[in-house]
Amino acid sequence: MKIVTIKNPVVEGWMADPEARWYEGKCWVYVTHGRLNLTAFSSYDLVNWEKHENIIDMEGFPWVYTCVWAPTVIDHNGKYYLIFASNDIQSDEAYGGLELGVSDSPKGPFKRVLDGPLIKKFINGAQPIDAHLFKDDDSVIHLYYGGWGHCNVARLNDSLTGFVPFEDGMVFKEITPPKYTEAPCMLKKDGIYYFQWSNGEYGNDSYGAWYCSSDSPLGPFDTAGPLLVSQPPVAEGPGHHGFIYYPPADEWLAVYHRRYVADPQIYHRILCIDRMKFGGGKMEVVRMTDEWNLEVKNK
Image (cartoon, rainbow, N blue to C red):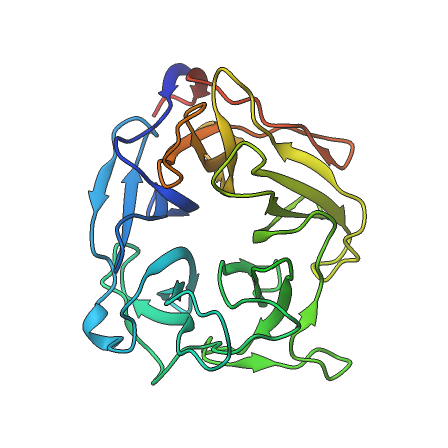
């Protein structure tokens, strides 16, 4: 074994809304960075990171003109699919929502798949933002998404271009848990589904993350506990997180953004990684750090 020291933030600059995946023997983290494209970072050791900018071929999305944010990526049938939010639509009369791209590589470029957004309307009150793709053990892929205090789940078809109704005929199920604001994600460990989300106001210290567990990816999700909370003087406003199982250390890690304490700039968010801990079907509150040590296997 060897000891690796993780220092937070793990990269320089303002980053937000991370999602982490393990592809090609590396950790990939996809983030909001800039206004009209997305950035990814990849690393073998969580210390040295390669930056991949402008991962979307935006020429294929001529209707996207206001903003791009909150990526989620999944590997499927030998390709990589990216869903991201566009244009921050405030009503069904505006055009934008959740967009779909595909690439042969986890670094992109991700090219347009559809002739318009995958989801372009408010359904069950959920603003079409903050998508998360979850592949279950049977390879069925669920899409969780939603802002404005509402969360939906839907089951994608094999091409990921549309949806398959659930057994009861519904296509979009509202599964809004307690204290939900936005940014859902799903983790499965030892047969337990851990559903997670962000709550509070993203620009201040009320922002954080909560979770609940279930024996189904569809819930019910009705018993919540905190997962990420402000911890001054280290940081405040942690949330819109992802996670990754890191094979070299046999550990689960939280990948999230947070804010420096009392920073008045609401978009000043930094990319951090800290340890996740589980026990008895529960998740412990993540202890935020400036740096910490990770034991990894020698190659």
